[in-house]
Length: 422
Image (cartoon, rainbow, N blue to C red):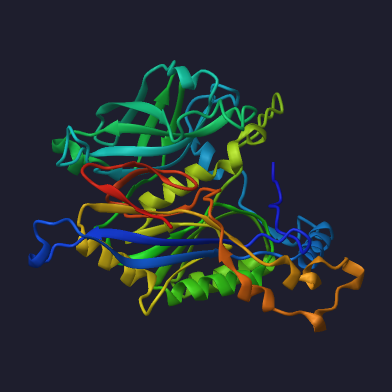
């Protein structure tokens, strides 16, 4: 099931701006015994907006598209069906494994880290919230069995504003003893109840190098290829060296642009496959997935990324530090000042404008004239005195445990989140 994203219109303009600064305690000898708070940097996040006319043109183009010829989308189920050894019916008891990674996160009990194989999965929420599970067994090529535990990437997927989304994102963590790590092979057999599948690859992430990468939520019904180019190039100017782009359905033009960047080594394209549908009953778990499963892809990307910093954002979002620093330089400076920082939370702040200066934006469509387009209204911009929405985060994959759409949900020990807010 796909849903087109809403956008701002000429009659209802929404420019969301985040201004933020980080605060530090001075460590100079002169104030060693006096905690002095100082502003070190301010960051602005601004979100693009789409005008009404452009939005209408895009919708008209999409309605004219022949899906079989113009839209590029991954094959159904390749990543999820894997290699089945026993019949695996598709129903509410099915668990879909996306990817598996060998990682070593730290906790308060294990500050030196605990080796584990972490799997990103989709599962039904109705009984999973009660943790009613048969054992999860992972059999590696060393022929040893390891027991896994499952937990949600969210507090719950059965409450709040999405009670109808019965399928949600989960992790399965399988702890591996230190002495067994070297014997872990490239693949494994995963068993649950009477179901068994082969996980064809256990991903290993090499030591992360200094750098900044961008992770996107899965693109769907996406056709705005000029914006993709603009977005990538602006972020490259901010120090980004890699873009991990998950996609479900994009136009051929978007796909060709992304493939060109992939050949340059700038983009890594990752298919976000549809879940399989039952041939017997027609049951389609994709109809019940929360927000196209974006949390699975976001957390998958954090483990996949090979850079020190990762920004989890959409393709209409850009973060620009004030002054002469790139975003990468800003992040490196902040971590130098406090090595315990493992992530950055950037909060939204609304902006307001003088409506008297923008009559051309309120004009009916039939009266709109591009030649009369003016920008004086931008000079009236001021910060609204209310934080009304959640922001976005930049994380350090070696120091975070779980991320969500707008924030870092859980850190590794002993790292902390630097709150960057207006």
